[in-house]
Amino acid sequence: MTTSINKVGVIGLGLMGHGIVQAASMAPGKRYEVVGLEATEDAIGAGKGRIEASIKRQLSRSVARGKLTEADAESQGADYLSRISYTTDRAGLADCDLVIEAITENPAIKLPLYTELGLLTKPSCILASNTSSLKIADMAGASGRPDRVVGLHFFNPVQVMKLVEVVRTDATDPAVFEQCRAFVNSIGKHPVSCKDTPGFIVNRLLVPALAQAMLMVDRGDASVEDIDKSMELGAGHPMGPLALADYVGLDTCLFILQGWVDNFPSEPAFVVPDCLRAMVDAGKLGRKSGEGFYKWE
Ligand code: CAA
Ligand code: NAD
Image (cartoon, protein in one colour):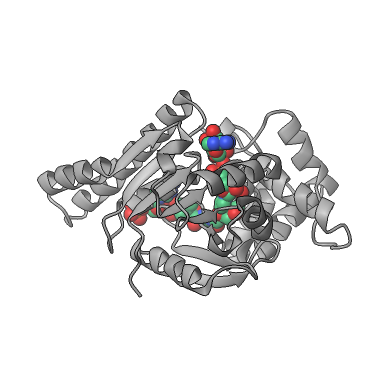
């Protein structure tokens, strides 16, 4: 299936959103016009800087491997960047065909945004959340157009990870769902389909495992380094669970786990380890703040 999506909005240019902008602007299957929206001009500046550096880095690697000449890399880079515009004004999303929301994992911030998006985007626009753990149905309800709301769950780092979970609620129009799968294919990623269940597929399995590693730290069972090395060398994971939690962001891990504990109190896999709460309270958010379970450059 080809997609009728032409203009894509991305809200939030943090860890995930900047990678989603890059993936959409470099889509091998289609030329998308991409609009990045942030809350402040400073955040636009930071997001734009990350996107430009990351596109440049990817093209330089292709030059180093002999897949592109310097001149082609330069002209392709300029072409990708020309597809992207930036704004702090939500009205700038009015004529998008697809808006992907990648803002902070907090329903108190996300839900009012969906109500506003339902009013300001054109009626045919598809609204997609990159949420790690929240119910898509809640955002669909807030938008006033539940048939056109899905989850599009990317993985970190977006530039490298090939999977996107495409999540449908009971109200999602099947044609909208197929459009979203086609969009994922067009940006060179692999879509999998999932119902609107806590954590979808990957996080339902992965996040409880990260929490179990943190509980080992709480109990003093083993050192941070030995827990991680064990999962790298003993289970073949590219990164240990505590380095991965730092990589995801400890604030995001806490939002996910606390939300699940509040909403599913009888599910034993959902717990908030003491060390996680203590680090977030101390402003240690992992890689993005320079310190978490590890110190990061
Ligand atoms: N942006 C762009 N490219 C990146 C990148 C980034 N942030 N990080 C790494 N890369 C690229 C590198 O440039 C390199 O590319 P080439 O092979 O073309 O040169 C390639 O990725 C490998 O990078 P490195 O050799 O530097 O590093 P690595 O081999 O140690 O891999 C990693 C880094 C890809 C992050 C790897 O450690 C990994 O896969 N870790 C696990 C990641 C993971 O599990 N992500 C899911 C998190 S959970 C989630 O996202 C869902 C949620 O809701 C919380
Ligand atoms: P982040 O903190 O790096 O970025 C969030 C960005 O949203 C910030 O730049 C912030 O300025 C912006 N923002 C907040 N409120 C806004 C608003 N009202 N309007 C516009 N911009 C706003 O967070 P992140 O890690 O990129 O996570 C974003 C979403 O993606 C969350 O829902 C998270 O659960 C999900 N997610 C995260 C990961 C991960 O590994 N970090 C992986 C997959 C999905």
